[in-house]
Length: 358
Image (cartoon, rainbow, N blue to C red; front, side, top):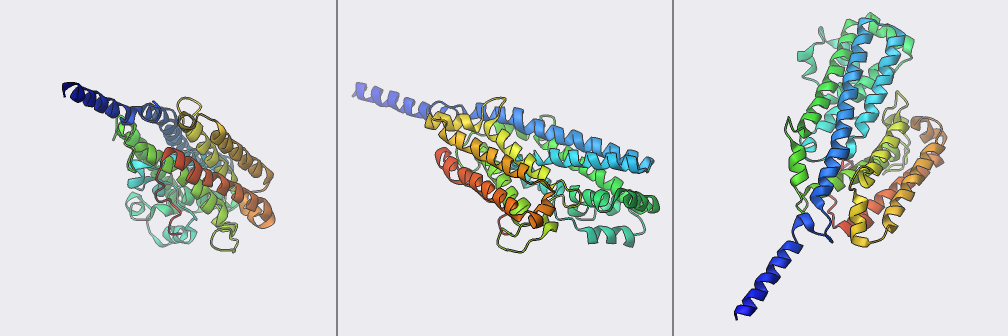
């Protein structure tokens, strides 16, 4: 009996050890993966965006202090840098930041240009108190794009010269963007809410586990890119009506660059060239590179489809619709690889995306 009890105790200990979350799946270290992804992907992308938003605000203030078309062009260029930097954080639209709707407050399009013009014309004063009462959609990246890009540079410059309220609206909107970027950074920072630590340590295998959240962030970014950035403007999602004004960054012609940034962020989020990535996790289970190769090949096809589109996406949905349709199809192929093949291997539960209910 004593030998039997000893055998059962040893067997139980081995079972518990082999099934601990930190050393499950053929010895693959989930916590190490989460730490690498946090330190090498999530935090750097957020830092880059926060820094770019500060640089953009400085460019706006420099322009408003010296209102010339040359300084306007500098501010416009910095808006594009900030928008692309933000896009590379969107794949990490997860956890506490998602719960607090931080990303929605940073970039929500299409632009509500009618509301913006009404606010500027109908109010005696555009100040911080007033700006705190209006929707984030009317003062974040989409609104800033409209203010800077809706007209040609000469007309835009004159509009700001003629209206102090318009200048104040631009200044306060750029300050709002910086505040949102800093809040996003604070959520993850060890000197702030320190979500990075709780995220890295949460190796739960269930739906609330960090890995499941991270994976859903990748799938969400893909789904939004395929559905909202490309499909809806091109009439390829639930409606055949082509509406170029639904393209992201419609006024600046930055929409294709933002799609490219989205796919680049998906690629680095999956392969993580600086440390452990999801590709390593998949390989630890399958012992083959077949699926990882399929993902890389499909990403390369998407890059090729983007390169084939030589005009702004807002023009291409009308003038080169077949090329946009090809891009949309390849995006869907990649999304399916994540939603079916990889998900099955890694036992992931796909939760809601930002396109659900649209």
